[in-house]
Length: 216
Length: 216
Image: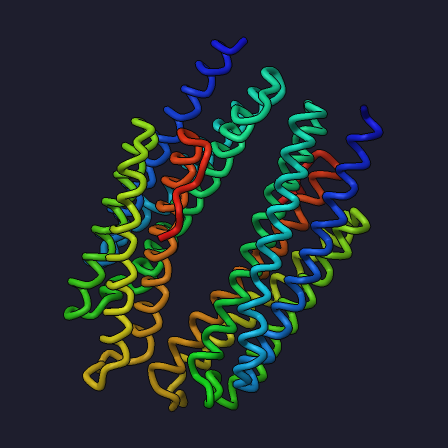
């Protein structure tokens, strides 16, 4: 019974890591579509989201089957519920990448982000992509150290968002309202992707240690 | 055993309805703070959020205790997991109200929203508050009809958000970048509150019927 439980749980975590890699691709391509104004790449992100949804359903079904058939209690039960929460957050990160791709698509043949803001946006995209890639490794390796480290990357994201606001609100902003609104929403989407990445990593810490990392 | 299960589940749903009422207050006060620039009301929303978090923890503990001690299977198991998801969404709706309150606070002694946009924002706040109030009733009465109805209110929210964008992007916008960015983010926050309200209502449909409402 316990062996079956742990094997099934292992397969759930493999699936979670797989979904995380799909999300990483979505974040990378959405940023690329955004910075190049490439409608095809944006469409690719939007249509690939259905696969993430399907993979989420599979994880949910397996988790329900574990709960029904193995009837885990105490710590084991909480691990399975943690997996259910992780998969919801990963799906949400996919949705947020779709939001980024849709802003890119909306502005084609133009590029939504004014030229001098692109470095900031490119950094946001890189940080988000890197965080998601690290979460995949954290899930695979149940890596508590790396999960705690991830909070630092999130601070960089917060700094980038503040920088984007400084650029937006400076007297030198000459790109009008539409680009300002796009940038504000894009900053919000990347920030939320980073928040969810930290939250998923924290759940891995919980799965391994039975406790969430202390908030710093 | 089954009797204990249903009694405990009943108390979870009572708690969910109670949290929903706290969220309704948060949405109402956040909108009031926003439209009047009242820092005290904004602070009230921000500090009351801790109570919502505490109430969420209580629901989670009860749900875990039901899962551990009653070991529900099949439909019963899915109902308990649905309750866990509902409480996460309600907490998130509280967080979004805090985001609204923080924009209000940031602009004190001014009012974040320019005068001619206030009617649109006031409508968004009303629609969101009404949706949350209806979700509390839907949870209390396990009201499938009302849950399905809620989708219509969500369409009104989407229309309001589109209207706010039309106002933002018109040539008559004279309120500068900061107010535009505030309005874009506020629209996003209210839209997310409405999305979560619909999602919680759909979970009630699932709890009662074993199925989610068809997407229309």
